Image (cartoon, rainbow, N blue to C red; front, side):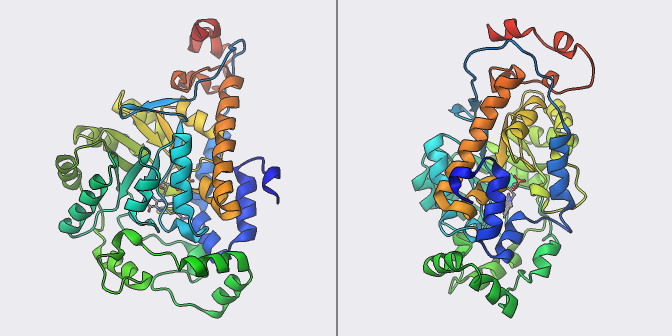
Length: 395
Ligand SMILES: Cc1cc2nc3c(=O)[nH]c(=O)nc-3n(C[C@H](O)[C@H](O)[C@H](O)COP(=O)(O)O)c2cc1C
């Protein structure tokens, strides 16, 4: 497929599938168990319909105010570990696109590029995602580096108490400790452009930790991170991070209204409704299903949303059900895997255009004005009863 023919994120996904080795695609696209959770996130978003109203004309405003600044779009790039497996340089492409287009880009603890290098490419737009390790000295050393790099927003991920079982990756034998096998070698050989580029750049590593590990190769660093895994994050940990981190603190991986309330009480500045893109628990609820209850539980606190976002309509649906901003994990990664930097830019352009046209089509001129009334409930006349008349909203 030519990039000019790409119409949507699924086109990027299909192009990615053709261009990168199967083990890498399976790692990026797959989820826990046999991927039912990945599909559920997408299906529950697709099942929702809008309740459009007419007669709202004029320019559409997609911007979002969050943590004291204005972002151009109601979506950002979620943290993705080992993203350079998609295409060497992927992390930098995400950072540069975020900086250029005024989106948040969340650097993963497990990024395949050092956080300092990413923050230098996107000085205004990087956030940092923390996987807490067992050793608090290491956690603090990392947080000191994050603050020194000028990053203000910290998202701590709480939905990875254990390593999950991803059957696709088990079948591909792409598991720690990794042992190359004949099928893997063949898989790589069948994708020479990926192979050459990756060989030139070097196999992706967990770069934020490589400096703490003697020798620093991927096997040693991965073993180090596995040994250091905290095995879950407690409320005491959140309280400790709150004392330690001066900037906005986000708790990522919330699926429960009571957890959301508790996070707010512990001083979180936002909660992030996420099931890790279906990668941790196959039978987790779809995030769009739990979003309304979380929104109701936390009042006006910002609620971030991800898992299953494959288009602008999904982003607008999340906005209508209470999300302050949506995040995309796989969508821009498929772009990078398919077409490198141009593919990340394409993913952004597609999503931004879809958000704009969706808002215009449903008769909502500002993303910030979305409400559940824009979601179809199967009742006639919902538009008249459930929200202000379009002319009033357009004023
Ligand atoms: C390949 C891959 C790696 C990921 N790595 C991380 C990570 O290091 N830290 C984290 O908090 N979430 C990680 N996530 C989860 C994303 O941040 C996000 O929650 C999820 O991808 C959203 O779902 P979506 O891919 O359907 O958009 C990862 C997701 C993928 C697909």
